[in-house]
Image 1 (cartoon, rainbow, N blue to C red):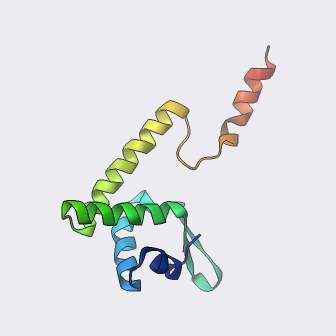
Image 2: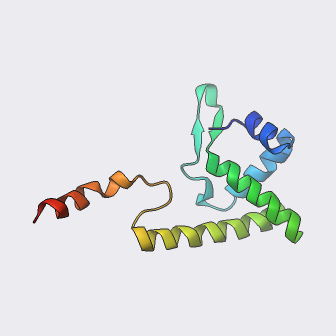
Length: 112
């Protein structure tokens, strides 16, 4: 998990730049759901997935000349397509533990 300070150092951005990018991602609805933890005294910690999203966001904005909000919209659309594809092929969402399907799978093994 990464604090704002960790994200700053890792990405080479200022605190304000990190916050602007996080706000752009947060503005896309459920994109950050399950990716942020609140630590002691209310400090926020972000998953490695958020770090990857921030990198992708900057890449989109830079290479395509988009605003952060436009790039976040594009990124959100791509992530949602990947989530739907993964759900359709595996029955699981990204990050969902495989053990969530264990009882059903185990039952089918032992029914023979």
